[in-house]
Length: 213
Image 1 (cartoon, rainbow, N blue to C red):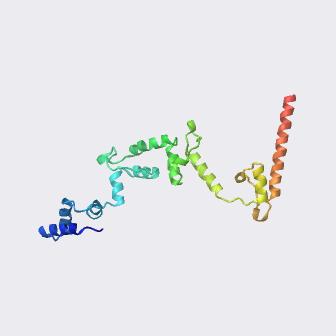
Image 2: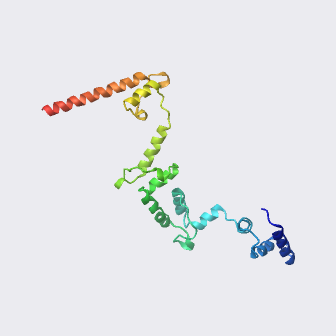
């Protein structure tokens, strides 16, 4: 940190005038004269509170601490309803409720999404819970789908083109290709297309017979 010559002279004068040899006395005297920047005061004069101590000051119980951690809540000290402004489980649930409501998602689903590093903003689909609420199983299913999508499908270029032409979902093709190392080849896709076509014809014939009778 660079300071002006004038300010440095003021600091030396104050320290000399008070005949101070203790660094804390010098710091306090300079602070009173507004000669110390806030950054210095925060770094060298304010007591350091360890993270574990901060947690102990914030939460009234281990359960409240764990729940807040799972929900990834950023809490201000002293706003809880327990003794000395600490947060209890009821406080954590109350704080989490607007978050769950805003995203129409259950609390267990919020916790699971945080565990999987899935941003809540990305959960913009209709869930399987009541009124389209996103529930735990929805988040788990989404994670499984993303894992599957990350696995490259082994398929030849020609087979892929034919699959796309016939609107086949490659990720849901539960087949082992007949190509080398299980790669899906053109013949595999042709076989699937043929089977689907045959199945569709059978359904059409069944519908016609029903209408005639």
